[in-house]
Structure formats: C-alpha cells, structure tokens
Length: 218
Image 1: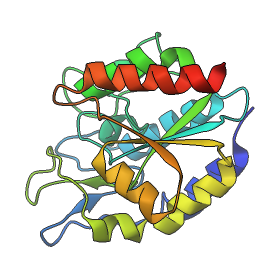
Image 2: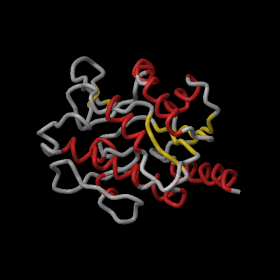
Image 3: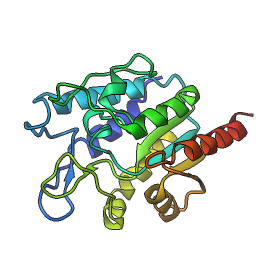
C-alpha cells in the first residue's frame, strides 16, 4: 500500500519549506537544499527518494504513530527518514532501502537509529515514525551538530504534524523523549511516553516499547 496521500502532504507542505540559516536557531530543510561542503549536489533528491521508499514499505495502514524529537545530523539529516542513518538505509536488514546523500567517505551512523531499529524492526509496518519538527535544528555555524528544538519551533510545525495525523489516523501514540512528550501534550494526544534511546536510554526504551506493543498486539 503506497501512501500517495501522505506523499502529497510532504510535497506540498514539507519539501518547499525554506531553510533558516540565520539567527541563533538555524534549521535546515534537507529535502530541498544541499550544503555542498557536506553532501552531494543530488542530496535533496536522494533524501526525498529514500523517504518515498520508506512510505512504500507499508503494506497496510499503521495503527501506531511514534513521535520523535527532530532530525539528527548523523541520522535523518542525511537519510531523509526519521531514526534512520545512512549506514542503516544501505543495509538490507531494514524493511526499506535507499542511498547515501553525504559526501563522507563512510556512511554516517547514529547510535539512536541503530537502537531504534534493533528494537522496532519486528513491529513494522504496525507503526509510523515521524518527528516533532521536520527540519534539522543545528547550532549556529555548525551544520554537523544537533540542538534541542525550542517550544516556538515545535509550535511552528504543529499544523504540519496535525495534517500528518489526519492522514494516518493512528489509534495509538508513542512519544519518544521530552520534546515529543511536550508536543503530544500540546496536541492533546493521549500518548505513551518512553525514554529516548540515546545517552544510556537503550534498555529502558526497549523495555517500554516491548510492554506497549505487547499490550497492543495481544
């Protein structure tokens, strides 16, 4: 089952968004723009195609929306898919595949992405994962860095997120990390809250996800 309606949502409301390279809270739209110093000229096209391959991997409508924080530079920033790194997307172990878009001699790898898919692989296609904000928030002057999205940034993309929720119509919501939990609260979503897998949270993340999906799938 291809999510044509969801792809249309991305084409109209996400891909055209302008990067915000000035100020103290820059954001980068990696689906639209290419930083030639760190990625291929065809990077945006590759990342859009990777996202399409992710959507194409769904054979049925997912009942669960997993909400993350924001694209990280070692992961979604170059893969185009939340909680997914270049190293993973060229690996046949995922339910979808894609190409690398950076100009690095080695595909970027992200610990959180590796933990996420080790835990979540068996639950696909019962869940769809997305982030609170769709652009990459980075530290000023450091494109290869991450920063926590501000509440103002989260509120900026609430409309986009609500549209995605309307398209998917999930029955269950899972918020991964503090920012996702805050976003779910703003949207009045009755969401499970789980530990982010980064910085020592892998074991608890796995335990909480197993508990949630055991109750859902029983």
